[in-house]
Image (cartoon, rainbow, N blue to C red; front, side):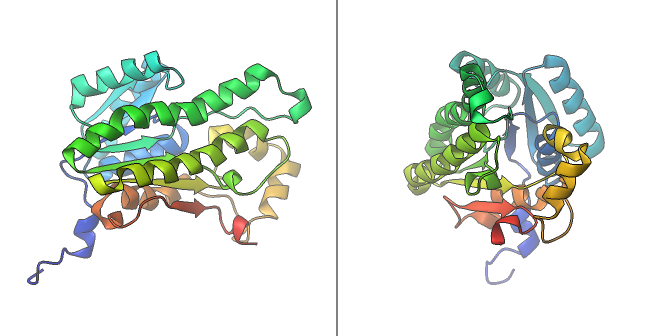
Amino acid sequence: MADGRPHAIDLFRLQGRTALVTGGTRGLGLIMAEALAEAGAAVCVSSRSADAAQRAAADLAATTGARVVGVTGDVSTSAGVDQLLAQTAADFGPVDILVNNAGVNIRGHADALSEQDWDTVIDTNLKGPFLVARALGPQMCARGWGRVIMLSSMLASIALPGRAPYASSKAGVTALTRVLALEWAAAGVTVNAICPGPFGTEMNRPLMTDPEKYQAFLQKLPVGRWGDLHEIKGVVVFLASEASSFMTGASLVLDGGWTAQ
């Protein structure tokens, strides 16, 4: 614009940016990777499976026309994160946008869950985002720009039976988001969280295929339906772009109104 203010749509463009989406080969991770690529970013998707990473990258490159590569690594261990980031650096160089999406869920009442069940969920969902952000955040700070997007959940603020490890991990992610936001704000790096509610992902398939459980969830949703995967696209592009430059430490809830009740 003539007065120097950017055009609204230009604030959302990601040309020249590079993004890493952990767990980016399926579900919301894949859709968010697609959104970032459509907005102009070069995108790296990670998985524990090399085949899954390469297939997803090839499909995304074909459908979006963006540069997309797949990398392999287990975010729940320092060695796995080192492996993942070494591949990312070799293919892409510096990462501008990190989407900490990799996650798992093991359902069951607390007295039926094992210590290993707890550790598996906490290590992937909470320790993993910490390890990846700890590695990439200081690099972003040194360059004076960065976006870290955490995947939390509506279960960070409400409870459901049988979700002890998952809800605990996501509440931790929300708290971690706020801490990192404060630590890195002065360096031009924002850290925000997305808190999805019920979306039609593979993780939620056991609920979607059980008519009774599916209807019980619908009754909690004021919009009267589960979320469609594409409905997370606008939020992740917003948080990854200049459009959200004055927002940090925030959690955006996409739950069809569940937590508004």
